[in-house]
Structures are given as structure tokens and as C-alpha cells.
Length: 164
Image (cartoon, rainbow, N blue to C red; front, side):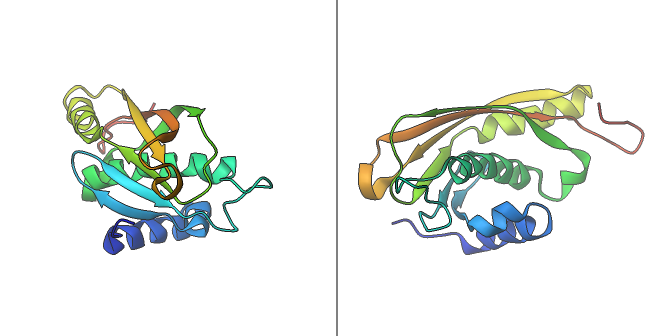
């Protein structure tokens, strides 16, 4: 399908191996990542299938989680230690059964970049709603199989402040 960005994918897997083993175990692949957004693929394998031969809920939701986090890490670069972030909420609308590799796309990179700048300027916590669309190009083309809304929450932390 699409060519994998192996450099970014390996960084994602290493992050998973060290901090979140589920990410490493699922082996998601970053297709593209930029300041504008990104595309990530979670392979449809024995590890991700459920009893009705579609993507199991856990890996399905994890793909959206990983893409949002990968975008945040990409935009922060080496400054990640100054911007602790978490998800404040997660909403998933599952439209169709995913029966092949699932591709997640988010075009909210600029919203994240703006929030990073604003929290550094004001010192206030920022919440950004990310919109992520999941498709299965092999079986459903460009038709969405799920829509996700995740609220990413971050705050600038320098050596003289504490995180709330």
C-alpha cells in the first residue's frame, strides 16, 4: 500500500519497548509524519484480530492513541521533557468492521504546534481535540471505518514550575 517511514517507525517501536510495551507488541508503522499531520498503520494480524475476524477494540483504539502521541513527539523534538502530555478523553465512533490493515490519519499538527506555543507563552494547560479518521484501503477504500476524537492535554514545565 503506502511506503513505511522506517526511521520514524523504529523510533516509535523503541519508545514502545521502553515505555509502553503494547505499542512494541502491535508493531504499528508510521507512513508519514510532518508538522501538518501524519498517517499510521496498524497491521491486521493474529495479534490484532478478534473472534469475528475483524480488528479487536484494543489495537483499534491504540492506533489512534499512538498517532496522536507520535505527532506530539514529532512536534516537540528534543523539548519533550518540558511538555508532559496525557490524553484527557477519548471518543471512538466505530462505523464498520475493520478486516484488513487499518490506516489512521490526523491533520491536526498545526493545532498541536499552536497549543505548544501558547502553553509556553502563558504557562497555562492547553487541551487540543485531535480528529483521527481510520480507513482500511485494502477492503473499503477511502471509506472511514472509525472516527476518533482525543483530547490531548499539555502544559509547559520549566525547572521552576510544577505540573498540575
